[in-house]
Image (cartoon, rainbow, N blue to C red; front, side):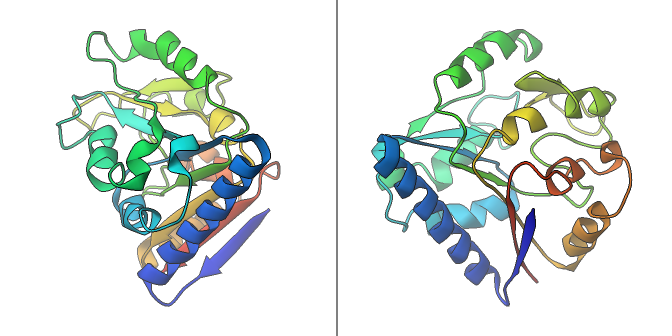
Length: 229
């Protein structure tokens, strides 16, 4: 089931989402003394990071995992981990356990066993999954113009490597199977263009043409959408 939450201003949307994430993480810590969160990089979640830093959460009991990662060093502009460390992992959130997806000494495809092993130690189902959406309908690093997007979307693996011709570097991404191993998923995006892409994603059509359909057209996990102009 998808619930669409519309706000007049972007700061209202990210504030509401930050409060919801805080509730989910505090509840998980109360129930089992640990919590887990999957978060994507990109423009929309970056706005969320600032609000999360002001949200009361026992971050030292939380594990944070990126939904995807560019295969570049952390100091590269395309590194999701670099974004996390600059925008989120300071102050109280800096006490969270962060699961890095980049391995400096091997190729992306060779890293998959190690990435799966690192994810195995994270408590499942994930307590919160936060994703953005691109104007092409991609989520995480599941892009419609990837040559093997169909295989990636239907894979039983935890991670896949995506090589998109227009991008400079390979990317690793959690698959829909992993992203939906969650109590709840939040999708955040802004602007009229992305609103149109979202509405198109609800219409019939192959998920390969609009990968976010794998999220909004499934009925197993609740999805909350946060949007503002």
